[in-house]
Each structure stands twice: as structure tokens, then as C-alpha cells.
Image (cartoon, rainbow, N blue to C red; front, side):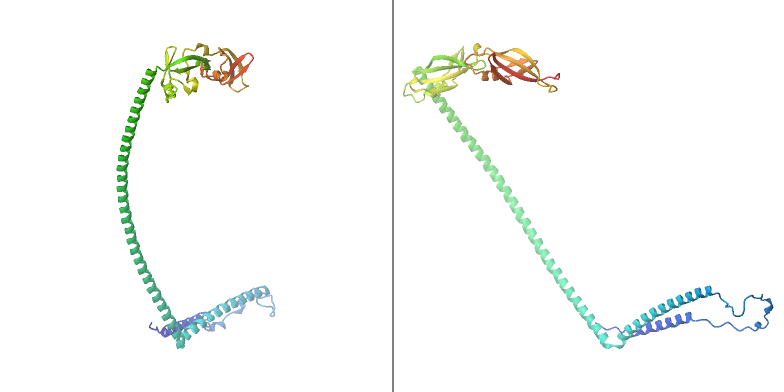
Length: 358
């Protein structure tokens, strides 16, 4: 790096500072004395009034003298501080610039320092440029990699759509084949079942299988009675006796019923049972003796109602009948009692209904 000669600048600065100091000193000095006037001899002292003070009395009072002394001392202190500061600054400037001007070693040291800083700056600039180039290359590689990823994703999406469409076609074809297969199996099963029923029906007719020993049993629930019967004319080695029982109807009160259960009783034959809920007046219970038992509690809004269960057969299960015997009261319909109990006086059902008077 070329060296700049600061000697002219330092000379100019020193000359300017010296002139400033001289001008400052000149401005701070006392001006010339006033001209002498010859009119003093002609002055009349008679116009001055006589003074009462003696010749030894001071011209300025002591109090004023103290004030003037303090102000003068303060002014001198301020002036001294200002002059000292100015002198220190002037000396520092002269020493600094005078040393650079007078010392070649100092200038050489500064030049070497500048050259070192400049070389370091060039090195940092070169490294920064190389880093920028590397980052540019990385960005290019990254952009290319992103484009590759995009192409791969698009290819995968296309292939995935193709696979999904192919899977849907295969699924539709498989479902169609499955439905057709199921339909063929169902048709074959129905055909076999129909043929088997026809064969069994033909066997029953040939063997003259009929229900005998039809006996009514007890009442099982509201208006329902159980019946039992034995299937006759069943050979002892007949393998499908229970199946024949399930498909052989029984006529009760003019209506045809299929068995509720079938049981192979061995030597006793095939036993069938029915639950007939038509034309059974002895099993038809009803609620009688309506009683209002009052509010369940004050402010509850609920009222107790009681009925007695009538026409209950001695062999009937009273719990089953209270739960299945319907009743209607106060515009309300119930399929059975909400609660029930049995006492010496009979079976009673209980209900709780809403009532605003409670």
C-alpha cells in the first residue's frame, strides 16, 4: 500500500494552532492606555463636595472588598483550568503528529499494520467469495435433488393411481364372482332343502306320521298355554325323527302351529311342545280392584296406583303373569306391572305415575 506523507498536513495544523493561540492571547490581553489629555490642569476641584471621611479611610468598603476578592479568585481559577486544558491538548497534538513526522519507524509500523489489515481483508473477501460459490453449488445440487424427488413422487403417484384402479377392477371382478358363487350355493342349498323336505314329507305320508296324545299343560304366560304331543308312526331306526318333528304341524283350535321344541325321548318317542296364545280364556289374567294409594312423598310429583291380579291359574308363575298382563288406566297403557308382590289376599301390582297434585 502506498504511504501518504502527512508532514504538510501536520505543518499546516501546527501553524493554525499557533496562530489560534496567538490570536487567543491577543484577544485576552489588555488594550492600549487612553491618550493623555492636557485638560486635567484646568479641572476645578471646587465642584467636588467635601467629604466627611479622613484621608486614612479606605476608598472601598470591606464588605465589597471581600466580594471582589472572591470573584477575582474564582475568575483566576477558571482561567487557569482553561489554560491548562488547552495546553494539555496542544502538547498531545504536537507530540502525536510530531512523532509520526519525525519517526520513520512509527510510519513503517503503521504501513505494516495497514498492509496486514489489507491482506487479512483480502483473505476474508476471498474466503467469503469461495463460501458463496460453495453455497451456490449446494443450492444447485439441492434444487436438482428436489426436482428428482418431484419426478419420483409424480412417477410414484401415477403408479399408485394405476395400482388403485387395477385393484378396484380386480375387487369388482372378485365381488362379482363371489356373489355368483354364493348365489349358486344358495340355489343349490335351497334346492337340496326343498328336495329333502319333499322326501321327508313323502316319507311322513308314507309312514303316516301324525301327532297323538295331545295334552294341554299349564299356563306359561298371559293368555298362553303349553301343549305337548307325541309323533306317532316313527320307525325306531329312523335317523331324522327330530327334523320330522320340527316340520310336522299341530292343529289347535282350528289354527296350525309348528312345535316350539322337539325332543327325542328314546322309547317314549319324539315329543313336541307348543305355546298356544289363541283361545285360552283360562290363562287370560286381568287387573282388578283399582286403588289410589296417594302420593309417594310430598313434592315428589308421583302417585302410587295398585291393582289386584285376577284369574291367575293355580299352576301359573305369578311373576311371569304380572309382567305380561297389560292394563290401561288414567289414559295410560302398560304392558305389565312395574312392581308386584304376593300376599295371603292375592297377587298385587304397583305403578308410579306422574301427578302434578303431588
